[in-house]
Image 1 (cartoon, rainbow over the protein chains, first blue to last red):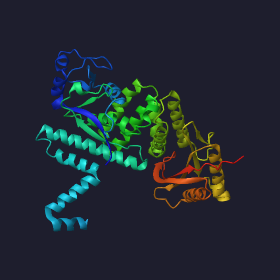
Image 2: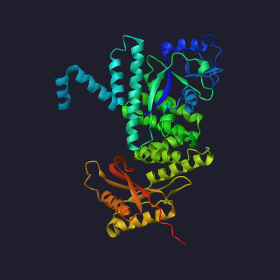
Image 3: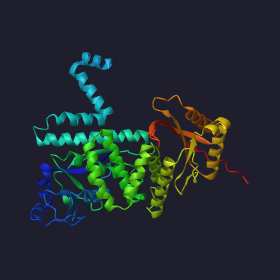
Image 4: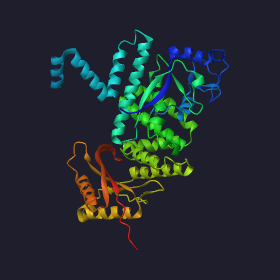
Length: 80
Length: 357
């Protein structure tokens, strides 16, 4: 069997639950979060990707270059 | 097919179950696609079923495509994709050295975006992954765009292709200088049948050769120069003699040998080509592609060049000049717009014996 690359994704219906779990739902709804690539304000409608880290969570808007900049050199490598 | 029917007749539902398990194990990608299609029939009934049907549909499509490309250039797409839907994350357990990106997939009216974004997220890790650290940003992204374009063409997913051309490519081209040029080069090479068979194959080996080294600018320059050489090969005029007999870099040493000029073949036969292969070997080239073209589709009986090329490859091996590798036959469009049969035979050069002084 071929090894698999894991591409992490969140479905629309589970988005709010994930944001709440990460502790960024309220700031997002209040318009306090900005895109880590282009700087524009991110809301529930234009959220493109989420980058959770141990000490902080950053978000990226749904503009194509912003999502691709975020995914270009990141992501999970195949599990051994 | 009759054996399958006999098994079902004899063993009933258990036989069907065993056949299903065997099918899933032997053809996992096709099983995913079928699973996605089947769940799609019930996607109206629940969001969970719709989510799973999208997951299996995208995975099945990407993985079937990846396997087909990997057959053309073994090891160029060595991994399948697993779309992992994340619901909860425990940040305290996250590895600080390993960044995770969670891409949002929209539910309704966004199937084109979902497919394109999933594929472009997968490409950096799924397509020649060992070479990526050594390629420039422009070449990396153009490989992602070209493979995504091939994938969408393979599925005949024209609305997603439109989204790729109208939305993704212009915006990415603004962000990355040189992306547009490389995309045009790779498109031309793909039309000529050289993108997977030569470029991905050579870059895969390039990455494997230097994978323990720290990435340097010279690596990016070497890969770009090699791509430009192959582009010159693909766009040369019939009968044109190229200035460079091949590409001789620090880690890539590859040349093309063209079999097809009528008077030369008829007057000197394979000898002329063998002499050239010996010259390439002595100059330090490690690999040569013997290239020949046959007739247009429907006129395949015009195979003189192909027959001579096959003879040359056999004689080169017999003379211990090179070992024959893959021999690839495919149809590609030539500069005059005709679709013709092409043959590309890989020759791995055998270094000359070292002289004892």
